[in-house]
Image 1: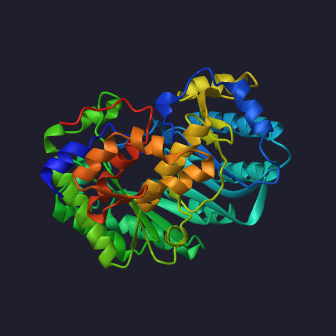
Image 2: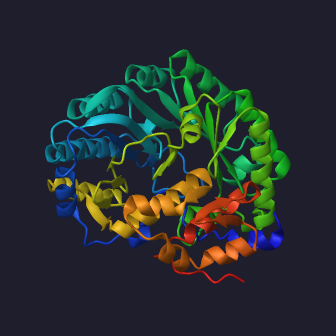
Length: 445
């Protein structure tokens, strides 16, 4: 891709559009009482997904942009566990009977900071408060550096069916520069152990754009990952925002690649994975042809939610824990981000909702268009508008950025059908932004 186009459209400030409207639009006017009302309105027969956020790590990776904190003792984790168990009970009291569950995801942080016996107890509570379908998927994010044999046995006993393993890079130089030293041997041994215990669906996370990364080191890491044959890989670009994430100030900015180098790294990783038999999914995921993500893309039902790309078709996601975001029929709600504030709300006997957003009909329309662009790299705007009861002409006319994208050869538009050219998929966020009515327009040079 041309350097001028990369510099024009690869703006780190653009949202990732995992949800729309995005979190900056959330307001404290939507609080715990509103959340309770929305929970009570959920259809009792409609399946939901659950997300449980664990905000602790045994070691802090300097690149991480998620709300986590360092803990080496058990007391903070136990205190958190008591609070999240109470939150699950409070939510279960609001929803109509035991809602059916199709997906559960434990994210973080590092969910395996929870002791094995405590984790089993947490799973037992979740299963008691909700009705799990026989085909329900339970996934967990894992830092292999802290995994023990007892923990793997516990994950099997808890019914975990998918594990997402943080890798980022296998290059020792890159690992040291971001405070995450993790050998290939260790990662492979954890993957083997999980598979031996029936947890056969494995995800890897890789990063590009890290300090001291090169195209060669990115390709080497991708090839090492491919040798372990994970079912899917998420390949993210490192977002350097030290003003927001203080831990990132430990990173040597002079060693970070520029936009052109980042694009070359992303393209090289994509080529490596596609050559190894993986299908490219949306902006940044890759999956084997028989993985649910690849099958969902092929069937046109790939979704995007706060966790990224998903084959989960649930319209409702209920989040637990500090900072967790719930997507309910009426809108979005987010829990208190700070663990201490989260605890205070739960201990007082109320939900920990700190802010949220009530969706309008136009929000739902724009969210649908953005989701299809992010998932399929194309969107039938007239068809989506018809389904939502809107006229496509004013909508397309108001998307001023589209004209510039057409002129620059990024997209093609025919009778309202928008298609992003494959070679420009890395700037899909800029295309989605054309339909973001809340985005402060960023001047383009």
